[in-house]
Length: 163
View 1: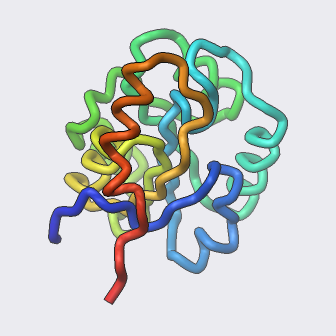
View 2 (view 1 turned 90 degrees about the vertical axis):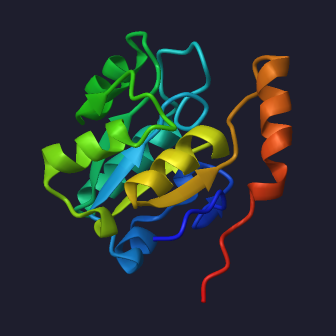
């Protein structure tokens, strides 16, 4: 496996990742980041569009699993709302949380993708774990530090060229 900071696919938002596309990609497990990927920072609710999308993905047979760096109750709250398992304090860019989700589910890394909004955490963790990375645009910039971080990611925020 070659290492890259480029995502396998790029989307405006998680809801743009259709169950049909996941099936065409051979994905059985979709790992979700929380902060700025499925919900803005500091909220404890999910938008109806995310709820409907998650329902459609699950109905298609793809398993969902939250893997978040967040230390608060947010991953647990969202996991409960979506009725899916979760890992918090994942330590991304370390692949530990992603590998733990793979071990618990028993799903092969080649049939797994991670949906995230950051290159330097989500993309690196996915790459190190050997799973596909589906990058989405951040939902909302909440502080200048994040805006600067996303600016530094701009050279890598394009899809990987497939051969």
